[in-house]
Length: 356
Image (cartoon, rainbow, N blue to C red; front, side, top):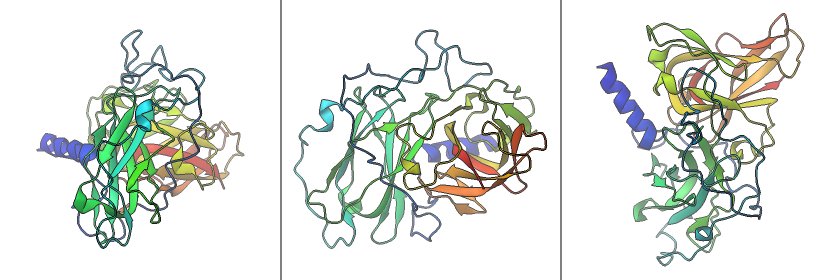
């Protein structure tokens, strides 16, 4: 029975939305507190070579899974200037249908964007999915669209769903070992066109496998997972929707590109991306190395990026929302920051901490 439940849960994470029934929004499932996914204008420069997946082509290792350190970080290197693909600004094949009749929100017929890795190389086969709130208050996630060899996707919206009040993008590449990205899609009620082109790409960061991933063994038993950057996660594999063996994560600088969910927010002192995108049907606690050298017994705020199936105190953390989930305390010896009692992770997306 549990296998059937997990299969259904994974299917929901691939195509679903924060609203379990896709019905009328009740306030807890509405994308909120989100920022412009468009970001700053794209840089110019030579186009980096395409990246088909997160798999290390040199030795075949997968940076998103396994129990030992990966010999090569697929995102290692200096980020290159963005080179927008020609398809990004090409003419649309269909004429603009114009505003939806009686729309009190923003009429959107298609959104075109592109997806890259940390270096700026296009990622093909990634899935771009839009979770929307209609002007009638209905919340739903639309079918995803795959990116092409140049990283470009064209996400068409069915005629009956084109009147929007809020919209958030979910961008993933299943099985690639890359962290999810959730961003707000900019909506302009005064726009002349119902077609939106996202000039700045969505960035999917590669996770690195744990330095210490205990054997699965009894999946009902909690265990401590230690990642290569020193972050530790205490969880029970049975509670994890995604495969336990695929866990990975990386440290991401708060000044790096593509962090749309931090626009307008106070930047955290440290930021970490988990992979794969997953719900935890239970509770996980987190322990950070005190790299910022905070004083013993000092406090930090711990925040997460909302996504599919992500909750806090029984309420959905909206896709794209950067939201506090509680506090942590620096240990007596000043070596670690421990999440306080009641501060738990119920999803694996992005997490960060800020000194209080």
